[in-house]
Length: 626
Image 1: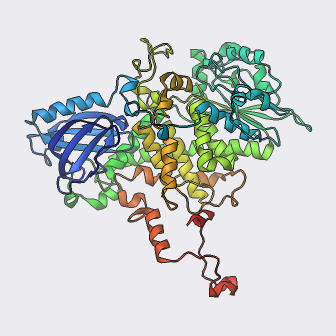
Image 2 (image 1 turned 135 degrees about the vertical axis):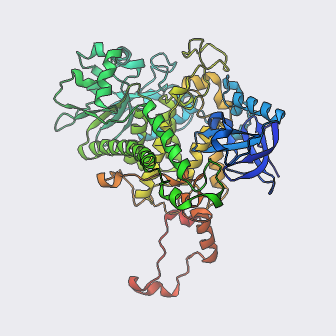
Image 3 (image 1 turned 90 degrees about the vertical axis):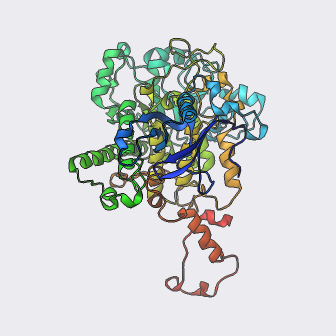
């Protein structure tokens, strides 16, 4: 049995350990990448008890008295809580000193002090696993697609991109090529054509962290743009910034409407004014500018809500960390969410409803943005406080609804690299991982690539996870619109949390270039190789039909009420319900296709019958790959 990945090394091992979730005895191994639990009975790796170190949110000792009915007093218990919804309990003999020492070392391993201690950096750079071309080139390629220009990679293309990429409304600026305009923005920025580079530089005074209004997507036909920024500074609200007015790309019939979408609740937006930030509502009185507040809560509220959701799923799942053997569990009350303590159960259920309310708010805002651009040909500027959390969620989701290209594998990669990586979502901070910092916790690009990290745990938040959950909900509404499956999104999120690949380390492209994460294994190459290995791989959506949703998608309001994403949230606590049956959808599909020959060019006898008399099998265009 091949237990380790390439470059994965065992650091410590403990025997006679019990995984209380399943009451299974085995061996616990700590490597430079994972915590691995191997069953003593089957000698196989137990997936539930095997978790990447970087995916562990916290690890702590549990007083034996809390589980004294289930665990003997001479046993110690540790609780492992994961960012991926897992809550694991391991028990072992309290007198086993080597094992106790291993647990203490494990507590240090899950909080790497240096960027270089993360597993992705321990993998030697292998040409076959590194992303090519570079991130800068891939971003420029996506800009060429937006401008409907053919992209041919060359030295002149990369150095003179702004000369080629412009139309009568917008252009590409290279003013940030050395990250001097804004350290957390991409090197190339799409801006209104009427704005000069000098005006662009002056516009940094108006916005927090110099995150000026920059265009993420535009309609080359109508000229409508989707732009993003951070909140404005209060001291400059007396005058409307020129760059903002320039987003109102002129139309032939009438001035274009500009909607400013502030993702924050109104009270929170006003509260930021006391800290120097604020909202355009304080002073902007322009006849063609309309301002909304979306009431999407901040990262701290989302982190608390996620913790409550994890507790709910763990407490009432068919497999729970409380160590209760299955034959002693009150299954009916657990599955129903009622344990005899009604008040506590109602409180837990409200945590689920709160989380789903957050997801609904993000979906509704993105749908409204899409409608304004599509139906009115209006332009939209989206921001929150800093412009890298809620803004990334809304811009990314709106792009996905506006442009069918982003619903393909290649388009999804381009979208993530543009609106999450290039525009500076703080992946390291949101996952509690080290990045390049100075002694005061500020980015210092002169430090070595393994500089210390001082990221507080309170900055952690499941921002990317919420975005992927919104996409999973759209997949349920439009099953033929996406080339990829829900399982692809689950695996994608897992690989981000694992830090097996370098793509999502650090907080910005500038930091990633400084740390040379391009030399680490690439998640996109890995996922592409998985798909290429099997035409029925579970990452493919077999019902994908690009002709059915060839344009924008605007979900109606009643359809946006979400349910819990089962493939991600229920896989550990309710494995049967997480994929709707044994083996999952794709395994059932494989069995079905093996049992039923695929219809080829030959016409079957009933092909000439009226439609009402035929046996019809509805499959997507992707089934042709078979």
